[in-house]
Image (tube, rainbow, N blue to C red):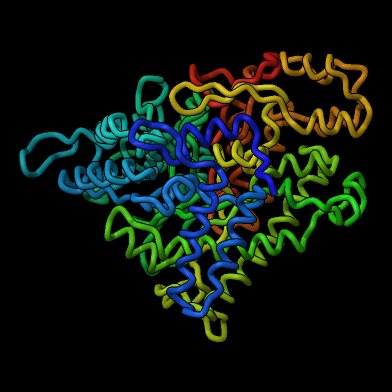
Length: 584
């Protein structure tokens, strides 16, 4: 079967993923890349079963990837079977309250970024600005100033020459320097290599509701140093997010209620996109299933116009989930880890994160609007099914290979419970470049725009016109070259009388969807996700800070583990720019 890649997929693969010689000339085809990865990942089978049919498993992995049904995270595609062999996407590193720890973390960050990974940190343990420094009797400079050191280190190291370093910086809402942290990125020149999020406690959210003060605590002494009005801090977070999309919020108590290995410590930070809470030195090892490929073809059922769950090919989806879990578990064993502590945590907990992409495309194929009750029901049902199969697969792997070593004392350490191979199994990642390769919508995001320009590495701009529009226009008999040209130039589908009303509804785009519907979709996926869900809550330029506040409160009420918002046009550089200025 010929590999069916879009022009933009080929551009991205040639720029960032395929092998090059010493002169920078590409010496590998996409087919070669998928074979390299499948061969490499399947070698882990021999560690557990000398008689394993490795060639069959390799071919299963190869077929799933070349059919664009499942793809692992970018470092696996880039590095598997090559000298670097660093296959994890991101890591959380500890930052303790000493210069040795801080600069050890800077060094470790440089090593990780050079190997192709991203990093997350909690700076909550650092003493506040102005606090005493015992060794010199001087004054501490505070977490924000040290974040700038990490930012500079990231700036000078490109990840293996293919990925720009990405960081997540987290500070607890009860840290005395919380105001400095919340407003630091109001200056667009600051912390350009960081996403930032405030770790918000349940106690803080209750205090916001009661409109009371809450204590700010010096992490060095654990003493209360002052009080702040909760609503003022919350409103400041909202205002900053309205201005430029940051900070996001992590509901840290909710994250730790789901911590599978509490005996090993509390989670304080996440990976750069927020979907993977991790303990210090844990890596995230992710892969995604393309849901757009999980629709029945003609002859297996009706032609996906019935708007029913029977249009999903559950047998194929089950096979792909099982394959994805096995693939990701294999990655843990053959990964070349950048630090010994990371290898110890990775192999001790064996956390993996199987997720999805192409959800919006699946809904389009099923003729279901993204912002409909039916879509929420489909999303929840899908994730419930995927999670059930994933954990069944993890239990079967545990029977075959043993449970994860740190299972004693974990939430799985219960009398009569079946052992599991992995401490977590499900994560919904943003799948930025993976979705370009797969030619599908990213993660669980809606269609961003029917026509847009995508900015990727080194200023490369990729124009995109949603491929399903012309396909469905032909199916439903309203295709015109003039119509496609109109959309490509940023024209509004809703202004066309020659486009059926039900088609206008299924091609609803990110800025046409109410923010509360974005939040609801994130929440239904979170219900059946072990880790967390990466999802941007999009706002049009005219949205108010009150709109953002409503979304933040709604995310908390509906059980999300965090929230990220973005009001279009508030950053000079943004990854996606749509051509219809009515919406962005």
